[in-house]
Length: 301
Image (cartoon, rainbow, N blue to C red; front, top):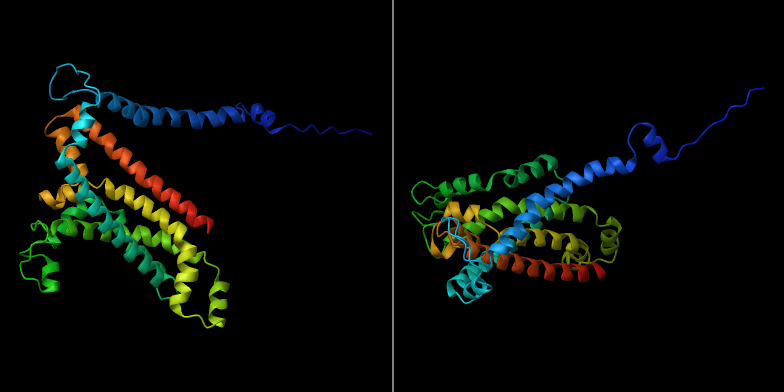
């Protein structure tokens, strides 16, 4: 009687028998990614950090002189820079709060059985898929005091939106809300769909009102994912450049990213602009860290 011998190879041996081991395949995917990040992310960060301690100007061929912390001291003592930060903070608050209110409110309306729900959701997501420069130009036409449809619809005559120093920043924030509220809506819908239905059924049996149900069931359970949306949108709003640059040239709309652009590419203060970029980076990281700590507290509840 013939005896059949079955040899079982471990995964590494089987992979090796086909030419490459699992470790080799893993390295083929990981190493190029790491090299890409080092070349295009980490190296520019380190390079610009070095320039932030110099008086380097990219418009001249003069050698960069080491000035230490002088650029940082001058920027932190510059009242105009702090005014740019104040404008940015005001814009971030108006924009992010508006996006959360509109996005979460829309998600609440869509979190029910309605006709053409999928189509409506898809259409609402379209703004966030457009280029910010295109959106800025589009809304600039809508805001136009002569033929803009917004003034016509609201009966405001020839009201200036982006040309008004007091209104321009809010006009940009409204555009940002229109574009990115769908992002908050999408994340909120994911959170709302994960809320167990039996909690609402128990609340209905206990005759709990809609106010109680929202603040004791819906909001606490959706709060973690809503906080994630707020973190992402705060980071992006703090870096806003396209919309503000395209829509308005008012001094009251000069957010910190526009000031950074002017300093780097119009005034050619390369070393100083690198220092300002790192100040902005530190502030964004600090704000994000506060959000993350609060997010962890929300999750622990």
